[in-house]
Length: 69
Image (cartoon, rainbow, N blue to C red; front, top):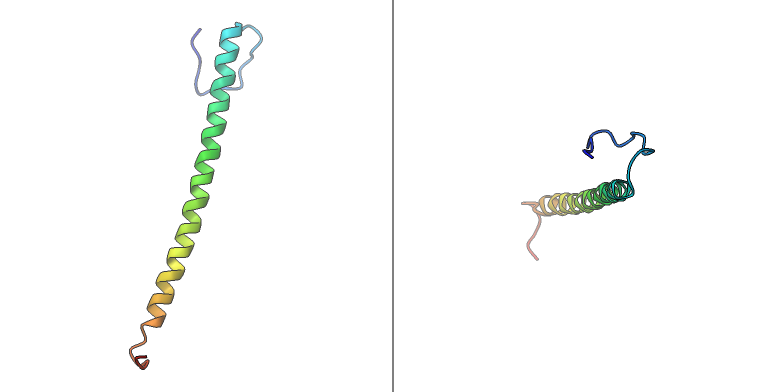
């Protein structure tokens, strides 16, 4: 049986056991991929926040009129 990869909400009533297992595994894989992408996005956002904060502090600390220690 061919699966329509774009339509996951079709009726599962006439599918064989193997097809149902394959569908369930594919749905689990899609969900885990979504969670992984969200996790990576979250890490990247935190890293960007830290790096912009560091670069802003670096530029503000480079005051040419400040006395050398």
